[in-house]
Length: 374
Image (cartoon, one colour):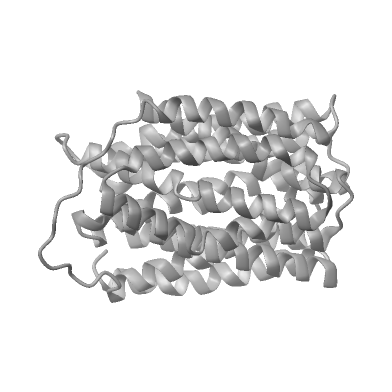
């Protein structure tokens, strides 16, 4: 299926970027504060860019065209990265890449759920077996990337990212076009109390992952773990996430969306406190990475399903892109910037403690969602 193939290829290149671009920036001579700034830039761009792409998609009905453009922009920007000098130049390039590519994943989420809506049976549960191919692609990238860096320097990563971006572009061209725009006489308010609570919970969960996504690879490297071990630990977390996606239909049948979101945030509190305060041995890191099944896999699936439920049909693209903007954009930016400040101030313990605190606040919002019957 073209959607599954797109998820695989897109998250393969996203996995390389997320797990190993901080090492590339370090190899270019940037310090911890500059790396945190560069990692935060895409999140800052995603605070408004996805919503703009979502509005354009709902207004024109051209979701696939926007996704194709996003993938092409990724290939061009990664090709230019080795030729750009200085943190300011790299920062501009990263920001442009984030602005132009921010709409891809949430629009494909809307395409996927829209396609499933026309099939018999429980549609939201069928999302997991399709979305898991993105996790498979991420596994392929993180494990392969770790092995690659045991033999090649981090400065060789941009050509790899260009190749993976081009694969994403090819599969994007085969995506279903999505539904054409249906005129609506009068639009209902979108920012209801349940939507606000959902957006706040998503913001907090993404902020909680800021230290993990910004410094986890550097944390492992400085703790003496090899590139293979680092790639394997990233891979282990995503394998656990794949298991959740496989059993998503049963999970949705047995538990409410708000309960899944709340349990995931509680797991995040435990996960980040353990990383911050316990020794970085494999005996700790293996179970901690398995919690990624909850802190990303279960949370993301339940959040996407909740967005589909609380937003009307004519605003599905805006709903998914708004959640992406607030959660993965603003929340991710806040988490990365706080992580950079905390890491430079007091090191890993304070940074991961801040992540745990953000998850605890998010749990309060997830608890509120249960009162809205979600």
